[in-house]
Amino acid sequence: MTTACSLSEAGWLKSGPAVRVLALLGGNGEEARVVGGAVRNALMGLPVGEIDIATTALPEEVIRRAAAARIKSIPTGIEHGTVTLVVDGRPFEITTLREDVETFGRKARVAFGRDWARDAERRDFTINGLSVGSDGTVHDHVGGLDDIAARRVRFIGDPDRRIAEDYLRILRFFRIHAAYGAGEPDRAGYLACIRGRAGLATLSAERLRAEMLKLLVAEGAVEALVAMEDGGLLLAILGGVAYRGPLAAMIAAERALGLAPDPIRRLAALAVSVTEDARRVAQRLRLSNAEAKQLDSMGHRWWRLGSMDEATARRRLYRLGAPRFRDRLMQAWARAGLGADPGLWLNVATLPQRWQPPAFPLKAEDFVGRGIAAGPALGHVLTIAEDAWLAADFPLDSAQLSAIADQTVARFTRDHRL
Image (cartoon, rainbow, N blue to C red; front, side, top):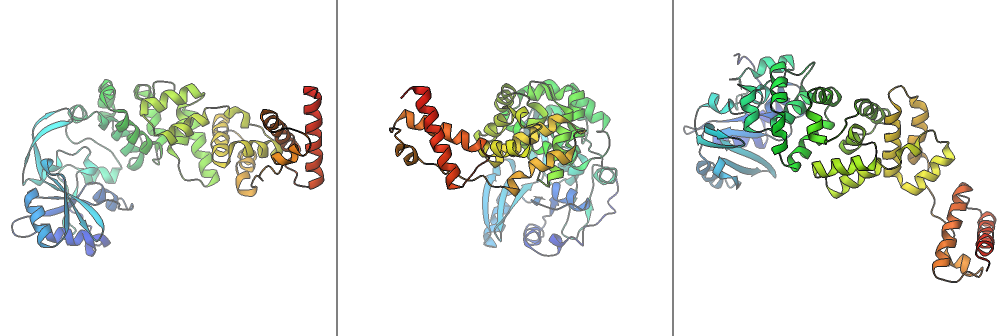
């Protein structure tokens, strides 16, 4: 497996807090390297976010060196060899090299070690098994460089065994492929995911939610989710029908509007046709209250936002508010399919940017002065007047408003024979 690769020109390896941490934990018989996603992203020319570091130093030595350098340390998972160091306000997760002694599900009895290859073999995918030292040399013990070049997401070792260690790796396989892979998913990994799909039932809703929401906003989300559905995996997660076409149309609509990917909006396109769908999915993934409310709204009468003229759209926007209006409109757009005329939808979808609904200008005193007593009758009259104001397309002229008030009182008086 080749190691003829360098990240010596990466800015975060030339200066900054990561350099300081690597220097702190290297030397005097110890070694430290950046591992995982930071190395992968740097090699793929993608932004580097969190920087995780592995070291031969034991956790107690990490803490001792940090204290000597006046660096804050937090024993976030010291029993598993993990300590967090905070340098210049930035956290770095430091983990001592490990090797599995015995594995049983997510749990594993591990021993601290000094073998970089054994540590890499514990990781999930080859593209996540790379490490880089302070000199920029990339170390590859698992074939990750070749897989990065091919944009291939492949399990390290036996896929069935890696999945059995943690069934969330099924979702991670598709999510990582959607974000970093190209073409069809790795065949061996895909078949192992299908064989292990019953294990998805053992996962907590919170863990499923986190991975699904990340997958939904990945670049290759549609293709990955189609592969999951073909393998019978989406039904196990969503508990219902998955709608491929509307998801692709929703993503196209987001791009047409220049909107950032929204995982809940995409989840609605994928899995929600009516509010019952939304409630089932929200429960299965244990969505937050805000997420569940957004999903439920997108299953509620979204079809009423199709084929609207602008006057009707203004009334819907007034009633729903801009966020809910846009979500439901985009759900209707997605259900119309990729063949729908984007120009017609764009005109209505951009209404919140072009027009802000005015506040209803008539007040209770306008009707008390016309003989309507305070109480339930007054509330009913205000509702009738507001409906009439909307039907008249939001007039603000005092003469028109006075006419609406007079007509409303006359109608109410007639209907209630006052």
